[in-house]
Length: 402
Image (cartoon, rainbow, N blue to C red; front, top):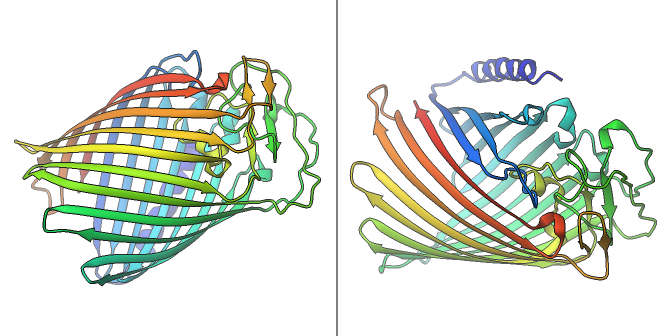
């Protein structure tokens, strides 16, 4: 499908939708942004190549007294790999105060060579908030249908339940705790052998004990030439589950300085996993699409320093350590050879820095403009060859809000 024609049709449909919903007094909000990025290894390869990336984003929000509707779209352009250009967009509706509801549609469209990354997510959620004894409590649940047009074996339903609390103290300290339960059910119970074709060349689908996930060798750039679909013939329910505990403490050090620490621990409740292996040309969150977070236990430690500066400048410095122990995935000892006698372990380290300048505009009360400089360093150490990589990027973002 032609991405440009698809974007045009989408914009027309969304415009008519917002106009059709114009049945009561409402407030419009618009945002436009342009980001230019240089990335030393955007696809997370052991021996990566650099790339220049442009992002063009647009947002529309319309608020009524009880309902808010938002649309956000982003087109990503790769200068050296134009076949990787993609369009991502989301439509989001929400309403309520203490009792809140939301419905969203999220869609990603790639060019034909990489339509394996196309997906559609339909999500709905309910949450309830209440203040008790100066503590903000929240209970909520979401249900998502995740559909992959080229990979129906990965189509799934994801159910989430969570409980959180937020407590602030007179010392300008705040403490947040969140407990989340995730349950994922695959819609195709059995996986059968598949005949190779052009759309799945150099790709492997792994089930149960052969979870390779994420990037790995194959699709889009070298590695193994063969691929396979692994079959599951057991009576195991094709589902996975996990518990996630997250704690965050934030402290205001001075009037314009804040420091926060975060810890997250996941507990896998099953050893079933179903992921695509053999995809090395992944970009940003693409590995999250195929490298299911329920396929490993992990610990995350993080720290953030925020500083407000004169002349409407602000600065943030963050660092995170993410340890992952895979429950069933083996390792690549080199570019070709895979073994299951040792399980994969990763340590993901990242540091990023942002410097932002806000400008006031007289177009409307809510209008403004910002210029933001971003830098991020990534080091993913792994005992599996295809997942051991480093990267850096620097970008400049110009955003206009009306």
